[in-house]
Length: 428
Image (cartoon, rainbow, N blue to C red; front, side, top):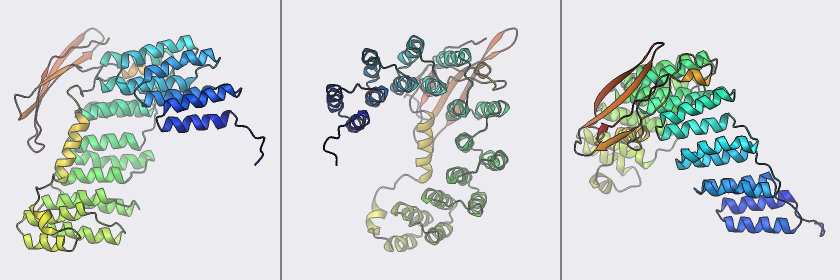
């Protein structure tokens, strides 16, 4: 190597990134000091790296303060810099500062882009702030930025997680009307939502729509639809989906097989569940211990302990230990709890989102909103009550509509009663 070679700005930026990845901001700043001492000024890449490290560490306010340091070094913040700050605040749930910073971007000479607006929409949906979502959509219209598939999918996911599939489907339809092509994620949201709503037939119907849209279903979509049929006890339909997936050349994974195994166990057909272990091996997938335990549990459920012991004896685990230990959660229970956690990670996880008449612009996505404030009580552990206030607009007046829905969740084992202290939001 040339003994006279000296590090350049790229070299220093690599070192700064390395220390930031280790969450050693003190060492990263030492590199910046050495950079300046060597006569090389830090650039936008340097500051963006530091800003991202602060944001990922939950210190977005420090990332924003870097703007002053950048201006001191005559480095102009760019879209990436501002995106890091906005996204950081959104992840922290600090939507007040996120929106404030977007307005500050005008003073910095940087216009917010679609990525920033999508981050804001997701952030406001996470805290069910309907006013915030509406303000972001208004800003998008002012800046002439049209929603994309991510914008629509984000709002779809909020409706789906709340179990309001009619609204979710409306947003999807609006996306199609706006000539925005749905992607695999959009279809995945619909499929998961319909399965969660107990309508696997509608989830399956998406497969033909995907074909017409030129979107190829993946193993996740197929497994999701299978789980819906398994939960409904329609194993012939679940198996049909499995065969269709294989015919299309899509390789099933362990989750796929475990879903079918659980389904056959619930259908009291453990011999079919065990057959799947052989199919797994034929496809080069080694069954995990959890998979074998599901099959053994299926045998035990119909009283054939000898078959369960036989299967477990063939594994490396001690069958006595497995059979005597506290029964683990079934695949359905785990799946239902995951769905519950996705839908209601906290008492406020009800979306305050918008519906469009034609999805051609941000303004057209607005129209109807639901309540944002909920309190929950632990006194009742059998029913879930969700009260939603929906506003419907018309050319002449705005009429509030209150909808109450009770849902029994005995299989999940976690039931709460939510008491609405909702605030109706009127959007004209």
